[in-house]
Image (cartoon, rainbow, N blue to C red; front, side, top):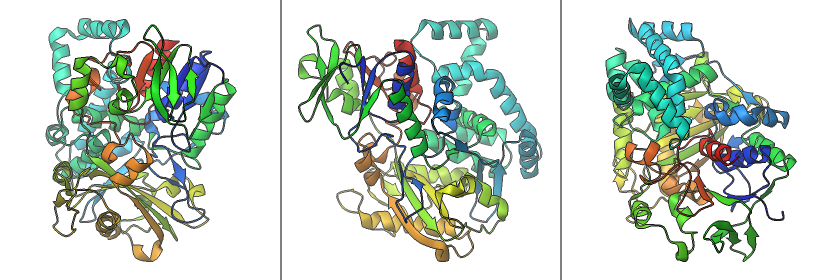
Length: 527
């Protein structure tokens, strides 16, 4: 492509959304990615056995389907082959004693289910969701809007007039509650604490983390509305639709190209990129990088080094817990001991409960393999049978409490290397522990296994350099590195200290997930 308007470095969800929205607005875009395919954390492969189609990393698309990005380009993607599969039971929790709670997309059913757990818990859930619905316009503008903007200032001002300044401050204070306090104060049933506590982990937060309660409420609201859908045929179908859309708009995507340096014009403005091959690509309007801060600023020339406050922030920037994935090819769908309904749940958490989540998260943060990790079990073939041969099945397991650097084993059963690095031996031993924990709930699980494929945090980083230590969230998501402080306290929207150089991705507002939020916000601002 001759002189694109924008060069986009990184073809994850945010880079693809940015390219699509910019292309829709008439800009010529060139997307570059160092891997052999687009997608970032969206990756579909037959990794266990022929005919078994696995989303290797991310799979659930509820954030994308409910995002402004999908509102802008969803129809175009659907016209190019993207479709989703749903379950009416998006999530549930299964505890060691075999008891479980299932969450549906039906409000009346959920109220009845919660009341059966403890009288009054159904009414409490209804109140919480009604309050969330009333707050949704304001809350989602904060979570997904352009923070440093006139429109955001006006949104907050209107809310202050509507509620009153003190009431608005009280609302912000309530939004900072940790989920442990919220769950214990809202629901009498420990089973409901167990249902919701694991969902904070999917935001990079622990039960004791600030604002984790707000994120749990957002998730409950979203998945009751839109479920936990997956792409029919695997995430590759969404990526293929993006590729066709960008191409139809006159854009171009190149893979297997590593950007070595951001080029600067005589005026100090970002004017293109230099590849590791030596090739130079000039862009007319700017360069957009979807990567971690360390990756981004290592590519800025020394003659335009970042200001001291950014250099200091780079040194302080930290990553969160690692992630681990385990995939199974099965000879038949699993028969859960608890009954047939469990086989219809899109994402089922296996955990002892709130204290179990807290304990495992703390162990992982201290560098220990959790003795009883929280296990998220996805059942893609229950939603989309095309993912496996007729009569067969796959399971998708995510372990959101994996140490990035190993210091030991909380159960004192697995020997960890003195250098703290993950090895195939440690990975498989930990996968064995996980399998023993969840498979006791499935009738004769061992006989169903055709193949198993596990990925440690180190394996995930080897596939995507932005997953530092296996951290899938682009950096720790605690309050000091989130919202107006993401990635740095000095950050203003998606600008950098270099004019024309923009930063998007999980490390930037509105944070991680498959919503494509940062790519959409920047593309909309640049139109």
